[in-house]
Image 1 (spheres, rainbow, N blue to C red):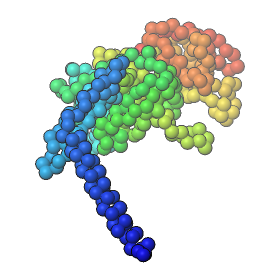
Image 2 (tube, rainbow, N blue to C red):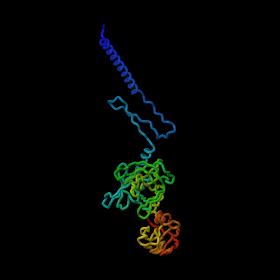
Image 3 (tube, one colour):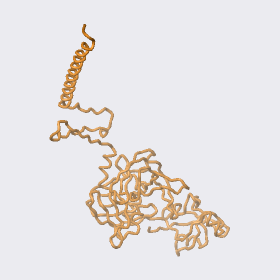
Image 4 (cartoon, one colour):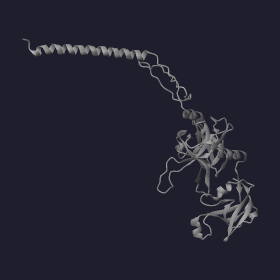
Length: 383
């Protein structure tokens, strides 16, 4: 009688050999399938109907690197944002504010907007400059001449000898809607040239206090990242047009709150109107009263026991000026222009800049405790 262990051992050996043979056959099948996949032609990519041309692109195929048996493919992804950035970047410059010794004392950004060599930037970028220089995308540079600047719009126009590497087009900022995608391009910190950030139009028609007695008006609010050095650079729509000049950011100032994503740009329609006058005249014609004044607010009114909490206190009147001809005197307090009260929401400068030289306006003037109306014909201020 044969014992059970003697019968079991040969069976185990037979099962193992069968398993090994199956594995070898399966491995051979997989190997042949992989080889067939690698040597076969790639299936053409069909772009779904309804997508814009930039949504997909046919990937170019590179040659197989020497010594490798696997073909390597690279994909070039083209989108509206990348196309716009490629088109407009050559027109974006870094603006260097130089001292009398030629040393850099500040920097910002700018954008070329004319084949004649005119460049837009912010007024605060070029303030106090003894000389100006622009640096192009490829690292080359050229001296720039200041054509004119306007502090109240924070816009300046420079000129560099043409030909220049690119030209950007100004768009219509009046048609912008909150939620539209926008692209900010500039040189944050002066070192990171042609940095690109993307965001949306958060709001339009914003006003921001400058701390200089007036507010910047008609600003575009965006959450596209803007940093020091971006000032004067373009805010661009997906149509490839400049719809604003990046001018400032707000990161605090609201009690203990810390703000993020609050960037502001001067609307392109304002930029266009101001730049035209700067090129033609070297300055923007502003209405002029011919007075020196001090702002009145509730604290000042309390300290000096003034009869009103808001307005401007006239300290000096220029001879033969609009104010002088109307009878305004030092010590008078102007509390309104036409129907606009001078208060926290309506600074004097902004109320004045709502008019043009030659306009006839009515000023409400307090002398002592009496209020009377004065008619003025506004003069023109060269700057």
